Length: 138
Length: 139
Image (tube, rainbow over all chains, first blue to last red; front, side, top):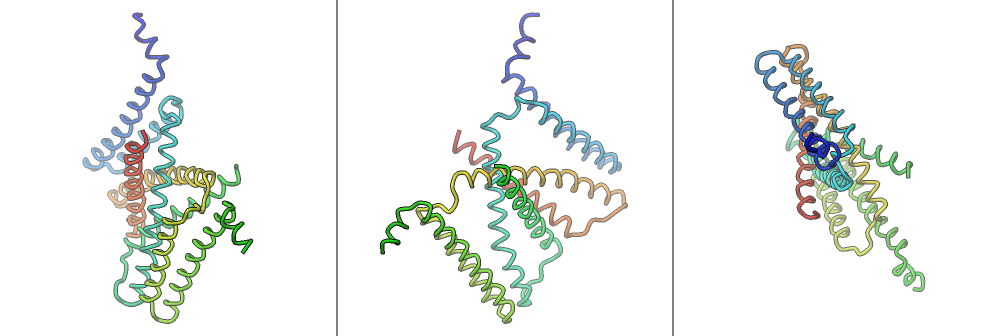
């Protein structure tokens, strides 16, 4: 009525702020629901509530055209690239080192450590696949 | 002589050469590692492998011709973004799901699974650091 609502509706920065708050709020609610319900002894309900909140947050993320601009996307890509490179470096250094120590009977990796290496390897395999697909698309 | 001169001025040839050196070091390092394991000298094998790794990093740092161009780097970064999306889905669905099943005494995930989940959590730690660093550096 005083122009306040109208301004909010059309101002991209205000929409962006609102969508970001909604997204952050849903992620916070997901965490809170998970830990609270888990604490009171309802683990399955806790995880369902968590997934529901995360699904809602993903819907907000994909439906909002104001939440992430080009700059955010570029930043995200660069940071993802750095993270994948860091994983690659860690894998290249650690993986043969651990196998060599195990072959020399110096140290046997626990299943947990094997799991860490497996997780990074899987990430790298996915990256190789997406790299191939992205390359073919261009 | 002539060929060498034209090579050093041709950026495409220089790029190809630097790629060959880098991938050559990878192959030599891997062969040294496998050879060390086969010959019963695993620590020597891994030492040689790491030496090749140090050579790789040193060469990449000092060479003038980057092995990958802007387009390649953009594709790599885009693929990394998609990869982290996949990792986020796996982590968000997997970790609380397995924790809930464990708490409800339905299924206990092996240590390998939890190792992989922590590995993905570590990736997002690296991602957050990268975000913070580039945000400060660039904008």
